Image (tube, rainbow, N blue to C red; front, side):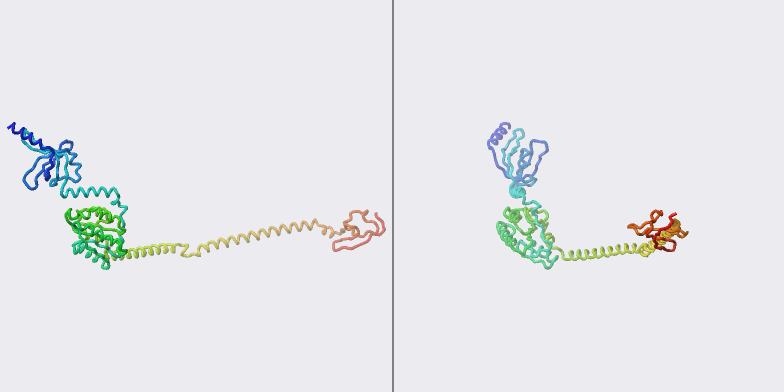
Length: 397
């Protein structure tokens, strides 16, 4: 038995590196361990083999590896003599079928993301009410019927430019590119919808084609992606200006609902009318409050109060003026009496006279007989008038 085991191990080890295709049915990769264990099964026969590898090989896989994933592995077969078991130590693992397609899509996703084609700043806004909507879809497909029916139900006047193209297979991408360029060049078309129903990964592969994605990115017209159902996520969803969950959702996002818009307009009108009425009522209350104030209820009250003060001030001023005039008149009378008492008129009234010499250059009052030689002409002033006289020779005693 021992010799047979050794001979089997020696022969198997001479096989060297082999490539094996199979389906993963079990993965055991515990954190912190240096070896991961898998079970690889032949999908066409009830045969399986144990597989070991470095955990990093699983982590570096371009697509997630789960139970049921079909892969091709490269490794060396090992035969353990002690237990009589065969296993495969692998150094490389590659997904096949859908896994390979997903890996290619992921590589393209990374490339386009690095170039900025998924950047939200590149997204163009959709028009509120497009004049004409371009629709690229399969001929008489359910997606086409859904978009047209929902859009016209929401806004009956909306116009569509429908372009029928294959939506799967090798002819899909060239046909879509041709119709996309034609719609983008039409000035009437303000938004373009690319619609298709759900399908397998292979069916939706044209909508992850690099040529189509770059053409959509270069379009001047906003593009809406309506591919598949909610779980489907072709790369067109990331490049398009808007991603719709379904074709029906695309129609709702592109065409406004006339009923909802009219209801919104009516609501806005009611709100505006209510706001205006409330503003008028509020201002009316303010005016009513101002009118009830005493100063505005009887505006002449302020004038009357000020008029009374003005009248009182006028009376005071007149009283003060009369008093001042009386005082000054009394003072003037006193001064006049004093002046009359001290003036020469009173002296003349008592019998005195004033003699003025008038024959000189400067007439002046005479105070001495020496100033009156014979022949001098004089003016004699008494209380009730004056007379002129001439001095003659006579006694000067």
